[in-house]
Length: 338
Image (cartoon, rainbow, N blue to C red):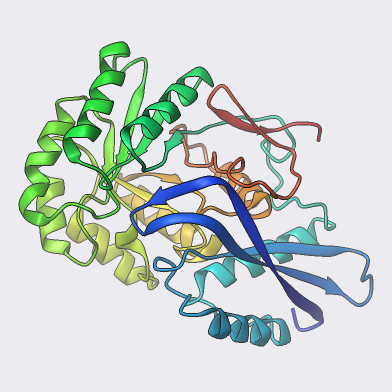
């Protein structure tokens, strides 16, 4: 990589509608595109996306410090970026793109060639009951058979009512329901809430309590009838031995991986290898990347024979997204017009 040149450019993407999360309502998304090339043929250029979520991304403290690091990386690409997962992912994907001729192709697999569809979940953002209800109806009409609902922002009983309404219309065999608490439950209330969710035949819950409470999380995973998936719990755990120790201690049923948060491509592959050895299932989710990063994540996912619905349906969030061959239809994402 010593003979490669690089530069970066900031991008701001506007949400089509405000999107509620446990960290507030999002209206804009900040990202930086890294471009790499070789002076021997500067016409061929690879592009990767560095995508951050303030308050969640472990490598983002401020725009100033982040861009200082990007400047440093562009001057010296072969840095150890283990503690900078979003930048690591951007650099990894830019170089893969360059190696594939600057075609915005990252892996040589059936998905990248337009010959494979990946099942995905339909995402329901936080908001008032009417807003969430409309999203649910839209996702059902669009053909999704797995719905993931973010919970913890409004009254829990109201969220239960929304889930009950779906379950009255569709059995668990017809519609799989996932919920994402983003650590919103207290340790004291978590068991009772998980019981109520289990009664609705929920597939799984992501991060019911806040990360950093390994003993309490392990207890929930062991005692709850509802399967638990770790997400935020994995952020900042970069050493393979510590990854192994964390999964050994907590024993979750699932882990959820976002390359921009969980160590880039290399870190994601490490998590998958460790999890599979422990018979822990997994799926991959985007971290609100634009279509540049999303396509790379889709192609990475297609390197595996994972049949679970993935969290890759975020390409339609923005008014000013990058043009892309990605297409979502009937609960699957694929590449068309290759």
